Image: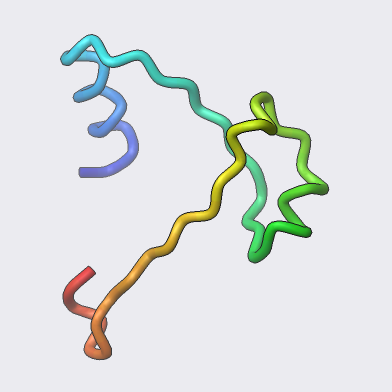
Length: 56
């Protein structure tokens, strides 16, 4: 699913969401420099894949 398909799917299911776009950051210190609408909910995520870059 691409971004537009994902948003359309959420709309069809009646799921409310908010989109906040910002430049990429690589640590919490960089993230503190970005003005976000809900700073109390700041979090890091982790994207994991295998060594062959096939399984995510």
